[in-house]
Image 1 (tube, rainbow, N blue to C red):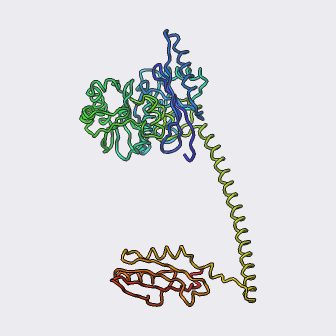
Image 2 (image 1 turned 90 degrees about the vertical axis):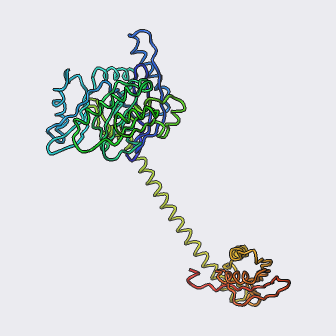
Image 3 (image 1 turned 180 degrees about the horizontal axis):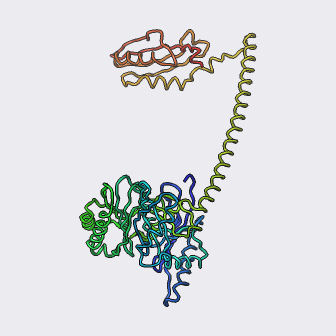
Length: 481
């Protein structure tokens, strides 16, 4: 996107509500602020009201007002299947529910569906179909409605964190395995050429990983075996990237042996603008904030965007409110550009008029001076074109670069005597004749004066005293121009 927008994302994680506001639209999001609040209640019947109050408390902490909100749902309640649809183009969306239904143990009406295209071949399209249990999503939407929040999109934590990883790492060709570690479990995702082609929720969470990395290593190994068995194509896994934790060398080795690829781990939040501020004021371990920040970033459109809102309400890619905001920003930017162009044009006209007036004034002064010269009262304009004494001293200092030659006197006679006595008189001493000759050669290269005569020399006690006469250098028409 050319212009940025503020997008808010909300995640309901158990009894805690997390909210993030990020400036999105560029290659990487800027984290503006985050807020969280945990609901407090004693009876299960009081949970809804307590959660609504917690959401309002978290929203009240925000200073930035986003142009829209998105909901970040947990992929724990998702159904994932790779399907081959015998269509291409617009027919794919209508065919996905029929192709997915035979694999379900419950009516497809209980799912909110979306998909991503993996590849097209001939008349077929391979897609990653993802469904969210409608009951879990409706409960969260009702909670948001109680706080007067109408979300414009519903995304998944796995696609959100993956979008954040892609903004940070910029994946190249081949297969990339991502292991997103969270407190409620982990998710193994496979990315190919900036497309999410597979993911699976794993039961092993961050606490179990710290206790025994072997448990998660076995889950990763079994999942990768299942994926690679059904995977078509020559691409091999290039590496395993773990987000949400900084692995110990022992845990990294266990996972590397299980996946048979190199392993890298990183806390993504700290790599984005605003992340250090969040880290200084909030707990950031185990992808605590990456999901909501990534959901806001993905809402601006891109390869990792999923939306489980009904088709009549959802806008895939760039959301309606973002578009309106960007159009408004574009109009402001265009108005500013036009105003600047007008100001530049007016300034240019004023400067051109001023230059013309100064030229006319200078021509008038020259004509008046010519008239005075005819009567013997004219001003010698050459004296104003000559270099001043400071320029001459700088020129001499730049060319006398040896400590064996010392300049003691630089005299500049009045203009009416310069033709007879020389324009500049340079006096000094030298302890070495060769050094004096080198200095003399350098002075002859000056652009401010010329030396037509040999210097006057006198030697006493091994010290040579010299006097050099220099004359004004004639200025040619080319140099004047």
